[in-house]
Structure formats: C-alpha cells, structure tokens
Length: 406
Figure 1 (cartoon, rainbow, N blue to C red):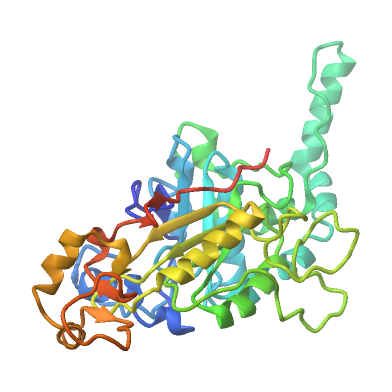
Figure 2: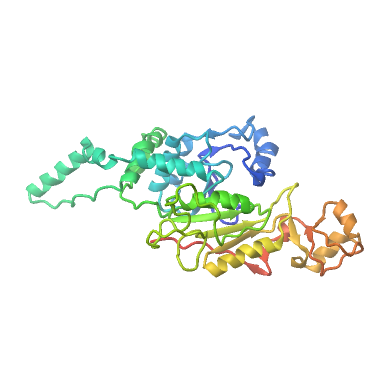
C-alpha cells in the first residue's frame, strides 16, 4: 500500500490483490507489468520477487494493519488494486467480499475500483445478492444481538437511560460482513488496545450501494466501450466511471448498441427515475444517471502508441454537453504537434525531414505532403515524452471529479 501516488486522479493505492494477465489491446504495453518485470520482480524485499506478472495472488494480510485503509486516519482517494484486477477470475468472491467489508468500515475514504472484467463484477454482485437472503434475520436472532436487546430492556425496566433499539441493518451490507469479516478479523492484532484494531467494526446500517465506492471500467476504443460500459451500467454503484486510457481510438458515449439479451434490462441510467423506460445512452444531460465521471489519457512507456487529440476532444465535448465531470490525465509519450510549443518542436526536429523523424520513431500520422522540413501547421503527432507533453488539452487543465453523494 502506498500512502502517496503519482497517478494524477488518486491520492493513494491499496493492493489486496496483485497480478493480472492481458485481456484486450489496451493491455499490450501495461505500465504495471513493465514496472514489475523491470524492477519489482528483481527486488528480494518486494512481494513480487521471482513472480511473473500473471501470477494472481490475494493478500489477506493487507486487509488489516498498517497496509490497510483501516489504519489511515486522514480521508483520501484510494485506487484499489493498481497492479491487478479485483474482479479477476482467480480472485474468490469471498475475498472480494472481504475487500468490500473493509471499504464499508473505513468509510472516511473514497475508493476507486477499476476493472476490465465487468462481466465478473456483475457475477459477484448477483452472488452477493443471493447470499444476502436472510442475513438480517440471522443477525437479529444471534446471541450477541439478543444480548444487547436484553441489556437495553433491563436498563429501561430499572428506569435508567438506554439507547433506542437500532434500526435493522441493510441486508446486503450485513451479508458483506457475514462473509468478509472473519477473513479480516483473522489478520487483525488481538492485543490492540482499541476495538476497531482488534476486529472489524461493522457499519451494516450504511445504504447500498456504498456511496464512497466508485466502480469503473477501463476502455481503449469503441469496441471495448460497447462491450464493457453496458455491463457497468447494470452494476449497483453510487458512482460509475470510465477510464479511457490508453485511448487508442475514438469513443462515442452518446448511445449503446448492445442492450443485452434481456429485453427488459436497462442498459443506461440504472437505477434512475425514468419510470422503467429503456435508455440507450451512456451519458445524458436529461436523465442524470449513467456515467458519472470520465478520465482520458494517452499511453506512456517505451512502446507507447500515439493518441490523437481529436479522440480526447471528442470525449471532452461529450462530457461537457452531458454535464459529466471530465479529467484529462495525460497526453502520454505523444502529443499533437499543434499542442506543443515551437521550442520543443525545434529541439525535436533538428532540421530532419518528416520521413527521417518517422524512421527515428518520433513522428506519427504524417500528412501526405510535404516530405521536407517541418511545417507546424501540419496535423501530425510527435513524441516528446510524457513529462514534456503534460496534461493540458488545448491549453486547459481538465481536472474534474464527480460529486460525492450525501
């Protein structure tokens, strides 16, 4: 767990799961895989030592203690599983429930969960819903609960002040604790002074879905957007978001082509006040439900593929029209030539021709003409590095976040 993060849209990271494997074109030059293979797998002090990146492991020891959000007092945004996919097929549903139980308890933080496997995310929530049947009845008939009822009644009978009977738990949150709390309690410190450090405090009265847990999908082009976003929109989440990084093509969020096999399913705006009507948009200025946040970024690293500025502008403009917060994370290694200053371009070109630059791997999207020295009006893409390319899109820093629900 890292108390600080260089990722532009988060404050910290938490890794109860590590390891992943490629699932689509966006994974081809995975930054996490590159970090592990170059650095962490060679470090004897690292949990990655001697492991390939596709070795998926759960880390129950990170559910509690210093490497858990339970120990962090100051509220912050936490990116969950930056080098893994929480909903990977190798992660048992019971462990995912334990992760959610920790997030439910340490509710001073905001958790940002990102997956390329929304189909399994949906499977988890359907599994949890089935497991939640009867959770309240089991809890309220338990010895501990009934002992509390008897103790409060005794105080009232003696004319002493007593707390009112608590409201029934939210059943699905109660089920999270039934499933996940034992795994968390097993790694807590039994000698700790305070109860919340000895066992997982159970905030089972919280509303569902958890307002401080943001669920998102990663997409890189229209095909992955059409495949993953409809599944995200069918997932119970207070905030749904899309990370279009690395952006490898244009993405239209105006409508969804895949409504699923169930004619009664709601692809967009789930849940919303649409009276059960079907919606085919991913974001909307009229409905108020759908995608709540969009993050866009180009690829970084030695083999980065260029992102065209118009792809990012298209998403920016769609979000502006729909009133959806938009964050431009980075250009990545490449930037449109008209977005870089002339000094940076002069230093890069050094009087080389377009084709010399292309052969050096420093220019892409070369216009048909001319083949000679640089023409700054041309709409080409140049490689100047992530730091030099920066985060400005048309000279503007887009750094918006979704509103935290009350």
